[in-house]
Image (cartoon, rainbow, N blue to C red):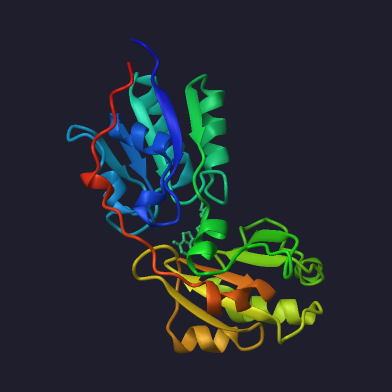
Length: 261
Ligand code: SAH
């Protein structure tokens, strides 16, 4: 049997039309599609009618499928000779554990390819009218996780507080008050502009701006919850003038791409 292949595809932050042309092409030719919970259903609807769809974001008892099991699913179908699309939110290599999946495929001698996606950490902010860098406001940006893995070193919040660039925190909502305090304790001004962007790039997107000190209270008042981005830095002020209404494109209605010869 000929060997299959796995495409690790970045789905983008939420708006389905932000997927790459190459990513959409792979979905339209997938035999097996393995996707996360955050992936837009419109993208899944672009798979062929006979494609096997596997949701690893949630099992019937609401627990995500363990990473080893996801790796095993990818290995199994690729070894059976299938074209497998592993569709992941944002970019596959930005906090998506895509690196571990690719390692497992490499260890098993299977073909794979990565199709980068627009990460919520950059593109999601753009949809909220927040440019991640700006000549007058930020000359660097730092994307960190607010989530602590067991056994991992905690983030060096003092070092992050000392940086002048834009700070983007993913997976930080459950610890928002603690993170805000850690940054202030590390020397960041409590008056630094800060925001939470929930459901970035989706029609239900919500942006709440505040200061580093008041953000936890404001986020709670607006009942903000994951998936959301926390952003700290002067670029947040640009939201007032740079917020825009995004054009909606129905990708399921677009003409299918030609099959690869
Ligand atoms: N690979 C993804 C990140 C995966 S980690 C990427 O590149 O975007 C999951 C975290 O990403 C979420 O907890 C949240 O902090 C952030 N996130 C992903 N999609 C988001 C969205 N549409 N709006 C806000 N935050 C999002």
